Amino acid sequence: MLKHLALTNVGPANTLEMNLSPRLNLITGDNGLGKSFLLDVTWWALTRRWPQEVNQNLTSGYVAKPNDKEVPASIEFSLDSKTRTVSYTSRYSPRDEAWLGKSGRPWNPGLVIYAHADGGFSVWDPARNYWLKRGNVDVQERIPAYVFTPQQVWDGLTVDLNGKDARVCNGLIADWAGWIREKGISAKRMQTLLNNLAPSDAPSDQLKVAPSLGRLSLNDSRDVPMLRTPYGVDVPIVSASSGVKRIVALAYMLMWSWNEHRLAVKELGEERATQVTLLVDEIEAHLHPKWQRSILRSVLDLAKVMHAQASVQLIAATHSPMILASAEPLFNAKTDAWFDLDLVKGKGTAMHVELSQREFVRRGDISHWLTSNAFDFKEARSLEAEKAIGDAFKLIRGKSKNEVDILRVNKQLRDALGEVDRFWLRWEEYRQSIRGAK
Ligand SMILES: Nc1ncnc2c1ncn2[C@@H]1O[C@H](COP(=O)(O)OP(=O)(O)OP(=O)(O)O)[C@@H](O)[C@H]1O
Ligand SMILES: [Mg+2]
Image: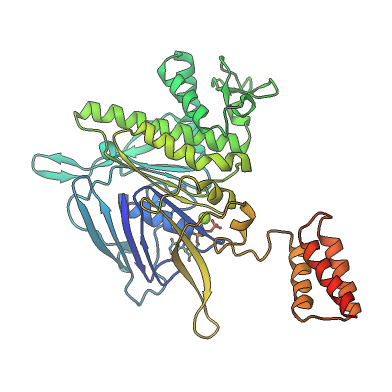
């Protein structure tokens, strides 16, 4: 579990500090302000690997580079390791193009799972990625982490291990097809995961797996899991919708990392991880609002059920007011936190990025989230409606009686607002007051 992060001269803000909460951490902010970057740095602080360094086919998760090479850059963090809370400051070495690490055995943060925005995943398992002891000497001969491109999640991951190809994961299609063929506990578990991730118990919202496997074409000999759609057609999982694929991939990676961890600790005669950190970028990616409304709770509940003996920390980046609204009944200021990245004006005209921890207050209506400091909308309406209402307020505040202006804005409002828009009341009240004054 990550507790604290402080960055200097790296990333979108020249200095940035974050005190994370033990359970749920939400990160909001406009495009390009550093949400994914913060998740990359979090992953690095916990595992000491940059995802793209481990798997060069990734198109994100690159090594963080200082903003100004001539000024010292640092990443300071503290985390709960298996045995105690530890803190460290890593400095960037331009000569090595790397962040310097503490020598010797790194800390063990427990299981770390990172769902990237594009559908890739990174997994760090203390049983399978941690250092080995040879006699009294620590050696890092294990795979440093499991980092999957979106395609490798589906087709499997092969890595170079001591000069030889090692098939470390068979991928969603082959594993899931194998579980369905076996008709055993794994297929049942996968179905339970999917049931729990569904937006509701309604039959039309459930992801149902067809009993038999299918084929994609005569030239493809792979047996592929099929999903039974609510309209009664069986669709190969690769042809499912983007939203369904995102959920299925999430379910599979949770299942794969949990399964493999369980098997590995058994093999090693060790205890299961007592901490799990889940990083999810764009938790709403591809999901309809109905699904966005349930995903946060589903992921928290699932992780807690799968890792019953572990403490689970979820750090999720989002663009969605629905996700924030859905957090209202879950949010507890003692265990949870909300961070918001903003572009703010400093001295003069220069803009800079600032991270603030905001108080999480229940706003109820989703449109109130859109107009909150999470999203900074002036109006939860179309751009045209926002402009028309802005112009209307200028007249109202100026108590203008100019008939030409009033008719012009009236037309703007008529063009942009629906007939039942609540703003009409305000506008009519103003027009009446003008008429009365005449
Ligand atoms: N490897 C890196 N080294 C240094 N800075 C980086 C690195 N990767 C990203 N950044 C910083 O992060 C910014 C991009 O932010 P990021 O991709 O995290 O935005 P985001 O908030 O996730 O946006 P979106 O909502 O569009 O996904 C870059 O402009 C840069 O300042
Ligand atoms: Mg991003």
